[in-house]
Image (cartoon, rainbow over all chains, first blue to last red; front, side, top):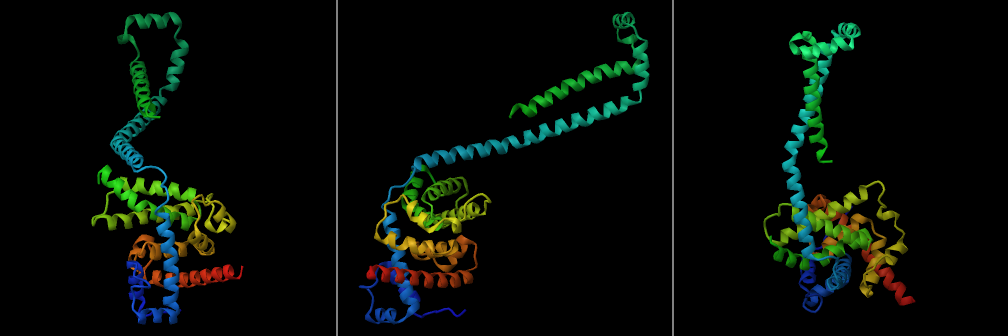
Length: 169
Length: 166
């Protein structure tokens, strides 16, 4: 497409921008604009927009700069807090993942003993169980001494991590 | 920028920015929302160097991006979907003759053309500055602006002719 580039275009734009059009312009320039379609369009459109722009500057504005300033400060502070809290969130997520992995590993490691425990549990009567408790951990089966504190520790850590993760929400 | 400096900058720049957003979007309510969001983002961002001229250009770039985001949203009503009659009906601002002349013509322009026309003829930005604000190439701005201006001039002349006949 061929653009209607006119050598007077810059001059016309400057005159319009400075508010010199039409009185402050030479007769030659005015004569040119009257004859040149692109320059004539330029003047017509620019004047229409400048009038609207000028009128809109007298209209009441919504909100106030003070309120915007305050809201921006609040937003910046929230963003900063979020940025600071990000490593903590990552650490919490990591701790949760480690706990879950440890838990799965622990269960998997004890899975082989599952049948033996099942048979052991079926043999143990209530009285024998009480007897074992009274005798202390030294009397316990080696696997059982590992299982009970392990499960307890896992539940404790899991609960703590779950609390930390859900604390924010 | 402290709060007093911002207050001064707001008073000087807000009318133009509001006019830009209102004319391009065709929706004064949306324009007010986008204007406030533009200033909030401007305040939260690192300001460009070069004083108020660059601040203003940066502000228009934020506003232009917000307009673009608004139109990209699937549920948002595109400007093309807004009936022409609504453009005038939803305009809560006081309507004076020049607005009454410009708004119907603007309603027949594409959003991109409205942007270019406002930035070039209301704000007085150069092709290069408009390219920075809109993300277009300066060469494209020149061509698009030329076409938009020609169409706008034709519409304004037609309206003037209609009024003189009536």
